[in-house]
Image (cartoon, rainbow, N blue to C red; front, top):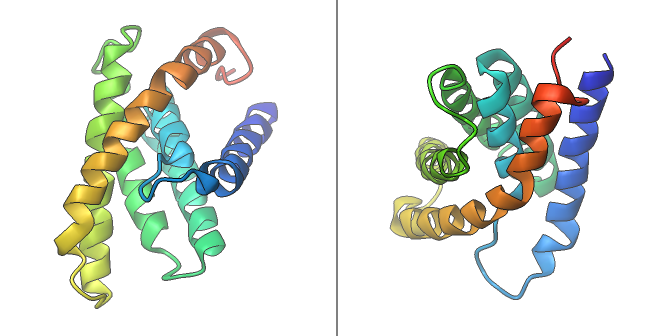
Length: 163
């Protein structure tokens, strides 16, 4: 129960940072701290936990943005599910592994968002979506070294450990 509260605080904290500090950066395309936290959590905790946290974080982002509620929920939950599937299949102690996973997961999430936007009838989401997704993927990989070590230690020995 304590672990769930800590995860909820991490997601809310990253959402607050995302919507305050990161949103004022003077660049058009910004890194997605919430996405990186969710992907790293799914990588270390598996499909079920990753999908739940991804779905809830996606719903919170959709509510905060106020447009097409459910799009980010579906895309982030599915991306977290796929990343969580890798939990026991890769060597997670090497820092390059989560960097590559976050990069590829960001591209996958971008494609899913474009597909859902197309299904929802938005005007031509494919035109700039791939460019934006690839730039955001590059930004996201720079966040991984700042976060991943703490996540790994906390999942193995700390407050995020499954008891």
